[in-house]
Image 1 (cartoon, rainbow, N blue to C red):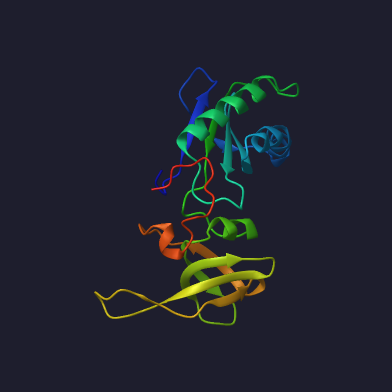
Image 2 (tube, helix red, strand yellow):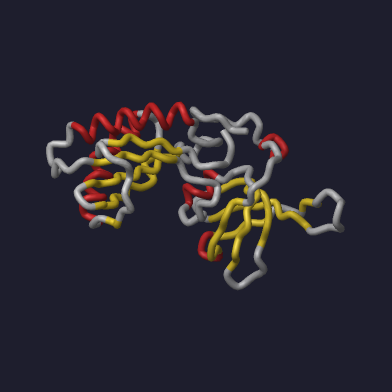
Length: 205
């Protein structure tokens, strides 16, 4: 698949989707606990559950991702399969308020901010922009991640038309990282020396 977000939805409303408003966090947390075992059983990670209410209807939005040790993205076939599983679970929810719902299941898009350690693990081999506390910002490829921080191979700016040069790897502790995001690119992962890494159930361009 491409870097675009994979999404599928199951309409349990009987009507088209209406403009929705966020529901209370308590119900989202309850559904997170309800759905997480099913997600884990399918070798996926439950990133987020949110609920929006539109009149008498609900939109349940679930975001799933691959485990942090795997590379690539969640394929559309995997999204479709887990959507059916989660829909069955919601249909049999003993604590549901019986309001109609629409289930939307997606994977994180490439534009997801890198805010957690697992996000950095999932970005291995990717080109990223990092805003650094008390230092110069860095653009580089994620080489490795450990409990303390991220090791990047920085990209050195050169003249227009020339292939970018790579600097020496640098280690950025997590406590010095203000924010990070993945750069959209079309280069292959093997250029980063990660072609033999395990890929999960995904289709990466």
